[in-house]
Length: 525
Image (cartoon, rainbow, N blue to C red):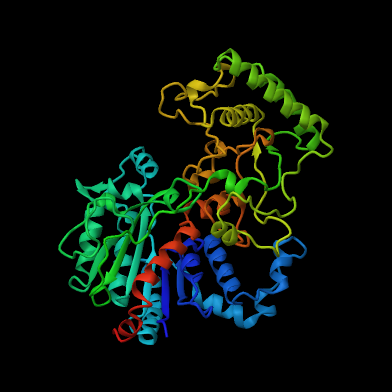
């Protein structure tokens, strides 16, 4: 029999890491990883977390009412009344608490004690402390705050609560995740990442071996005397079949009694044989129109404005040589003609649920697709200023023709926004299209405030990405429903660990420690 592990997820967000771990199956179909506790403080993310926990309670026999709700056939029912047992288990698994607060500590510690006593060391601790204080964007913002003092910013030290819980649980394995900016963040001249590693190495008086998942230095994974360079802990999501260039710091810790005897020179997370691109996951999704953020917003008014915009942009070819300029003009006019002659003007939401291109890997397609869906949930476009419609169209068509997103210097003067930094080079990619044949750029929480960085690659749609399209690039399954308003949904998607990557991490961990060592792990205290 293989060991069964309880998973404790801290700073869980909408649950990307836990989704990956809970998806692993034994040969008999059972789950080796059971999510026992997930903790998140933000209300909408917590509601998403709890709702996904509710989904998992059905073990593949999800009721029709769930899909009727996602398909828009019914209003959200009272789940507690319809399915009291499953809803109660979901409420027990997902808690809305602020880690590190005195009010939450007593309740959390009581639950941790129960988990420890029941599973006797067969526990996996996962999660990533909030990253705003470490990210490059966050640090740039902090510099603009008068009197900002990193030493007094509690976000720099929330990892201490992760370590406190690590010391209480002493799990077989832990996974700590954070932004790449953690490697260069410092307080009082000391690099935060070095302090994090030092604190992790002190847990249980040196009870854990800290391993990188994808080391590039050539160091032996299980040489306990060797400390890997910080860069070894960076995982590049695009190397592992994720349709997004996302670089994160991920530290894997294995308890010494579990790691004893293990030896491997190969990466724990080997690269995928084939890469995934924007086209692999977005092509075939419903064609939607952008909204208009000012004035009346009807399909007819939108079409009139877009056609006028496209025909104007068609003549802006100064950035191209003569031949490419003619091609750009022809392509723009063709798109305008197709829009004007179409039988139906696209809606801002809706559209039938569609399959995934065959070019997508079978594994990723199976992960995302759910044949019980009839439409895409969380899929409604945002409203944009009329002036931005031309910039979005130009950027997308430029991307189709060149295979790259245009920089500020590549935009026609007529489309230049009234931004002070437009020509300084500091924000050269202020308008950035996601090109079809490459992985997307990093999906961040900032997509909730500004769609300019996440322009849809289809020029005819003149818009930024929807929540569902961003979720596809983050590899959330299509049946994963995000709670809250659209802004809150974007924040959840942008802050999450790609679940498909989490699944690969979980599979590597399980293949490494569980099957060959199940008997020994289950005896650990």
